[in-house]
Length: 217
Image (tube, rainbow, N blue to C red; front, top):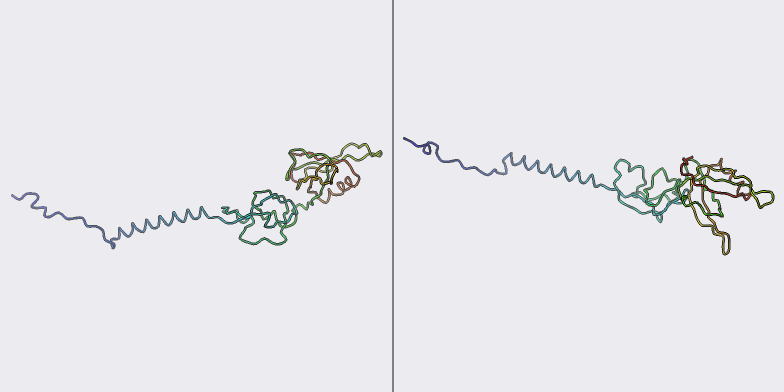
């Protein structure tokens, strides 16, 4: 009687797949596609563009030139068009039309040479120190007390300006032995200019008051 081994015949050996085996080709293709997809995703996530950043505060009306800027590579995605790109040279007559703070990207809407609200910088000399909270970009009210007829007294203060933006502050340069104080630059509209110029011309006592809740005008 024949045994089971005699009927089964010689065992069939497993053969390694060759290069023409479709299963091997499909596997290689899947690996290549997967790696290419990962590399593309990483490349898109790390894509940066050179943009201008302010080295220092740039006040309204100041010229925007390379000395005030530096270039950094950043990833902005869909908002890239809102900022000034370093891939293009700066226009020779470019000016700031609003305050640009040190370390900020340059919004396209903030350069061009004209304030969108038609404000102009007005320098005001103050014999007293400004409040500590007042800085470039903050908002203040300006009060004026008219000089009395005897030139030694002042009338009741009246508010001339409300919620105006401070664009620059510097120490008053009055020379050796002169009075101390500060010069504050305010952004005012044409409607506000007559009252302020009259107060300055008549040597009214001007006081700047910090207005933390002031809204843009």
